[in-house]
Image (spheres, rainbow, N blue to C red):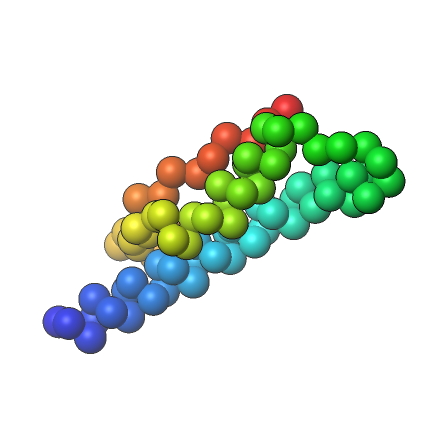
Length: 78
């Protein structure tokens, strides 16, 4: 049972990182604009930081359908 829980926990964290990375990639253009002199807003910076911090702040789990649960995703700013 301990090994099963460890495997589930590792799988959940892997899924969290995959989704987090997808969300970061979705807004990478914000940082590209910043390199062109268009600064990111504080909300955009906060969103990216919250995504980067998720692996250390979240306790993800997996439901019976192998879907990621127990994660509160930060709200993407407009």
